[in-house]
Length: 210
Image (tube, rainbow, N blue to C red; front, side, top):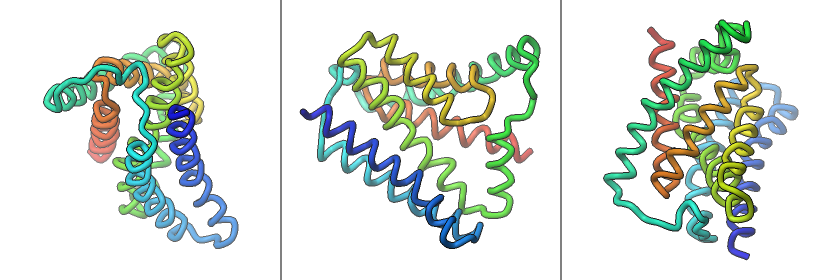
């Protein structure tokens, strides 16, 4: 089945990219080489995922319609604003109602790595967003919605997206996942949430640098 080939190809690529640097680090215990390997593997992962998505094409229910590239770009930019607002609102809920830490461990760790190894920006701004959108939106939302209700698939993919970040701010990441799923649903094109995710990561890093 095309859906099986598409999903497996993307998932296997993602797992290889995620696991290789950790395996590499157990053999060669060097932080600089670890982050170089992560950045290189992430960059390769970007091109490989786009290639595999074309080699094993599958248009799920979300992608059944087609809109103009201009509309895709517009939804990507508007989605960035929506995602940023949702992040701020859910963070306030977590801080003041759930009494969670103001600090995002995930963001703090990333900023520390970037301060020592600036080339890691390639992974954070480009590689991670592209691969995560292919996995959590294309596979776990779009492709899965072929078999179950789209809302159920969106919730499932968003919960996985939140767990994968292992940050403690599960509500924030889950809501971000839902926003990105909504962008994908409206755009019918995976490029829209990819754009929103890239710009969102870039915006967070720029604000952290101030």
